[in-house]
Image (cartoon, rainbow, N blue to C red; front, side, top):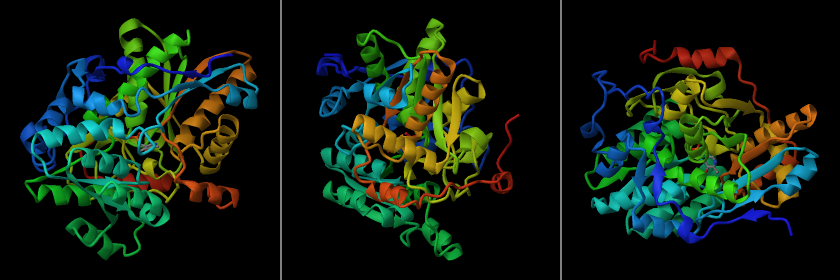
Length: 454
Ligand SMILES: *Cc1c(COP(=O)(O)O)cnc(C)c1O
C-alpha cells in the first residue's frame, strides 16, 4: 500500500519554536508609539501582555524552548498528520506531487490552539485572571476559550457581528468552553459605541473587535489581552507546524518546491513557511513560499507598505506593514479569518524583500477549489483554507501545462464543519465575487495620517 498519511510519534513533537528574526537579512522596523512617534518599549505593552510574551515578541534568539506543560497539551492533537493528496492529484490530472499539512485535528478545528495554549499558559503563570480577545469567524475565539479553560482563566470574546449572526455554532462552542461572547461592535465599550453611533448597521471587522478587546483589558489590572495573529510571538508559536512538516517531508523522501498557505494576519502562513524559509536563508535552498489572500481583502497584493494601526480606533502601536488602511472594512465574505486590513510586520518585511510571494483569489474560485478538494480528499476545508487550496490547484495546473513535476505543500489550516452556511450559499449560487476598485483602495489609504516608510 502506498503511504498517504505521514505521521510522527509524540516524542517527535518539536521542543523549540523557530524565530525567523534571527535569520532575516533585514529586520523589521520597530513598532512606534502613536503619541510620541518613538519605538515602543516593554513597559508600553505590559498592561496588555504578560512579560514572557513581550520578551518573545522582541527576541532575536533563533530557538525558543517550548515549556513542557505546553508540549504536553500539544500532544492532545499534535503531531498533526501530513497527507499526500493522491486524490486531488488524480482529480487535477497533474504531474505535480501535492502534500498538505492538516491542522484541523485540534480540539477547535484549526491551527489557532498552537498559540492559544502557550499564550494562556504564560498569562496564567503571571497571575492573570481573565483574557479578552477578538474573533472573526470564531476560530481564534474558540481556540482561546479552550486554552483559558484549561488554565482556569476567564475569557471574554468580541466576535465580529457578521460572523456572530452567521456562525452561531462557533459561539456555542466558545460558551461550551466557558467563555462569554459579545457581538462586535458592542455597547460595552467606548470604541464599540463610537462605531455604532456612526454606523448603526456595521457588520463589524477584526479591527473594530480588537479595539473593543484592548479597551476592556487596558482598564483592568487582572485582565490581559490576546491576539490570534499578526504579532511576532503568535507566528513564533505556529512554527511548530512547519518544523513537523519538514520531518514528515523527509520521511516521505521528498521536499517541497512550493509552500502555500492562506493569509489573514499571517500566523498559519508563517507557521508552515518560516521553517522552510530557514532552509532558504541558511542553507541556500530555493523553496517558493506563497501567501493566498481573498481578492476582496488584498493587503499583500494591492496594499501599501507603511506604518498603520493594528486596530480600527487606533489603540495599538503603529506597525510597519502592508495595509489597506485601518478604516478598511472588507466585504462580509465567509472566510471571516481573512477579513483583516493589515499583515504582520515580519511577513510584510519578507514580502518587501522579495523573499516570499503573494496572490489573491476571487470568492467563487476558492469555493470551487474547496469543493474539488472535499470530493477528492474527503476533508471539508474551512472557507479560509480554500484560498491555499486555490493557489495549490493553480500551481498544479501550471505544472500540467508546462509538463513539469513540482512538489507542492499547502497548509490545510482548518476544517469547515461549522461553515455549512458558506457551502450552502455557494451551492445556491449566492457567492459574490467582490471587485475592489483601485479608487476604493486609494480612498481607504488616503485616510492614513501615519508616517510613510521611505
Ligand atoms: C484565523 C484563521 C486564518 C487566518 O489567520 P492567519 O493568522 O493568517 O493564519 C486562516 N484560516 C483559519 C482556519 C483560521 O482559523
